[in-house]
Image (cartoon, rainbow, N blue to C red; front, side, top):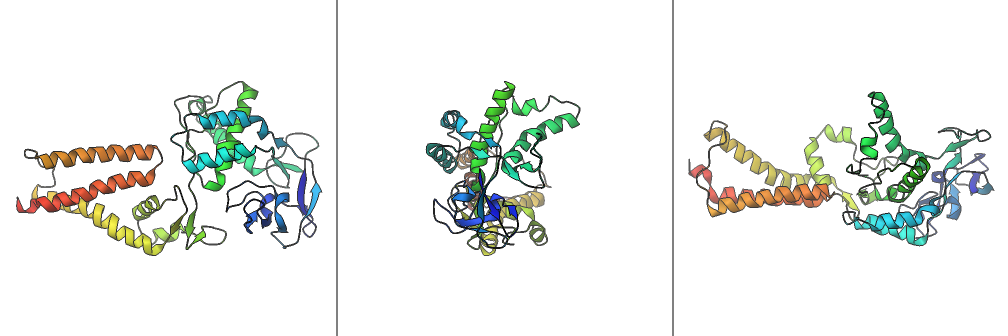
Length: 352
């Protein structure tokens, strides 16, 4: 296969060490393995204006022998799988995956010329290593097998991987959709053929779009991120959980803003949920010795609020189960707002 070679560094370059212009969307910041702008998986030799990430030189293209995953052999099976019972999948994940299949799956090299990594267990290939995109997803299965071995029940991994009632969810970013919705299922299909055993394919791949910070994609390498140790030195975890759930990029990119974080925490989480919890618990503690009192006869308004609360709890649980976290949170906050209005309207402090 053809691979980029840096004459300055005197080595073949990993896909991510080659940068250039995407041949599909023309974004100038594409990498050799993928374009973050359009999400397409790329081949480094197809990049326009290729340059080495280390020294900016133009890589040569040289031949090197490698092993491939024959993804093209599983196109039909993947199409059938992605067409059946996927109503709970996010549209962006399905549209991207089906779009790749429509274009035709290309076989992908699973080895590279490296000095580190998992070696090829075959003589004559001592300089080759298994490439990370292929072996890292295998860790989902191998970790379960390792766990089963460690607890002295070597067959327990089958509870997760071969019991049809077990559902696996893969929470990832949109730049990993290809590897979890296409490549990993194909690997499992191939493993099933080789072992004549059945393995559970992903039940859901709820991939988020990008979380941006100040309008740019969050990046730890560029120090553009929210650092948890720094955050916890100033705030409690729950406000961040609330804001990230509310601002989650489920269907489109979402920007993190400290000003918006503070505003929504104060104006919504504290003012709505915190206010409701505080006033009800404080009132109960002061007037009923901290115990929930026996209710009087329910009015129509009382029964209606209780009914809507039960519905909201059920809706929140259903949405969370479908990985629609924003919708689940909105159900909970809507009934909290209604409960606050109920407390204000009934003024129980005037009744005791």
